[in-house]
Length: 172
Image (cartoon, rainbow, N blue to C red; front, side):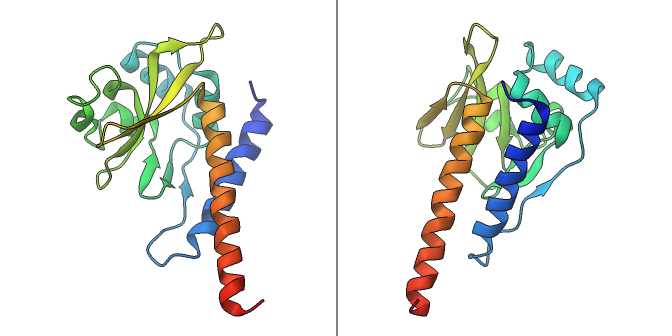
């Protein structure tokens, strides 16, 4: 498990890399981290989901209660957005009956979502993270920290590719 300062650094790296990557595209807005979630909001989310929040996810929300434009147009939802079903997560109920209630990232204009799978918990209580798509495809990570680190690595690869492409176009 990451220390709080390590989680802050990881989230900052993701936001920075997203900002730099998105700058290459006209239609991709910059990510916008939210303010910290309150302890009350975190406990309400646990009650709503019916399981203890994975430690990495709780750390992330305690730093930024949501991040707009986290995964293209998909936000990392704030606790309040999850509780109010602000993104109509019920649309995932039919294709993913076991997972739709534990969605923590999804958008209204996207068929992508990310959820915890409470059926798959580690001995430490960390839950697997699952990418849900309208095609039924799933991508899995053993825990929230692995999901964030994997996402950062993918973003860094995308940024490097864009930088190389632009350099080739410029004749560098």
